[in-house]
Image 1 (spheres, helix red, strand yellow):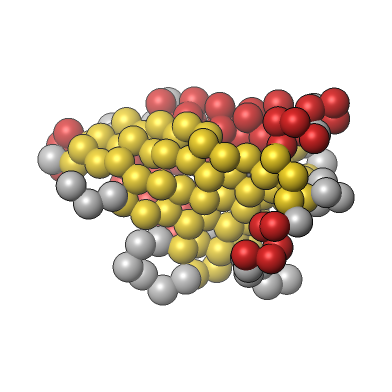
Image 2 (cartoon, helix red, strand yellow; image 1 turned 45 degrees about the vertical axis):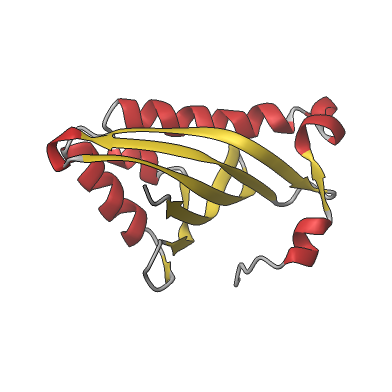
Length: 146
């Protein structure tokens, strides 16, 4: 399935913390972010990659869109091998009215001292529910210029 975001699609979403609070969906989406941060802190690239669908769309700054796990795996292996510190915070969280799609937008801080990198950026995840939570089906990120 092609996963393309359009502004009208996002307009059909409801802010997750209010409309879906009773379903527990915000907590399960926050758990994805918590797991991302824990796996990054543990320098565990496989744990990070396991958050992604096998056919994830990977939209990296300045590169062509790719599909699959090669993009996330390559980045997370580089970051973890270099003992990078990466943390995500959630700034916006939206869930479709039928609860079959979520969009998480937030800030990322990345520091890899051995590479002289200390950067901030923005990420956008599109997530779909799976049996035991949510999985990332699209990851788009942008590093801010200094």
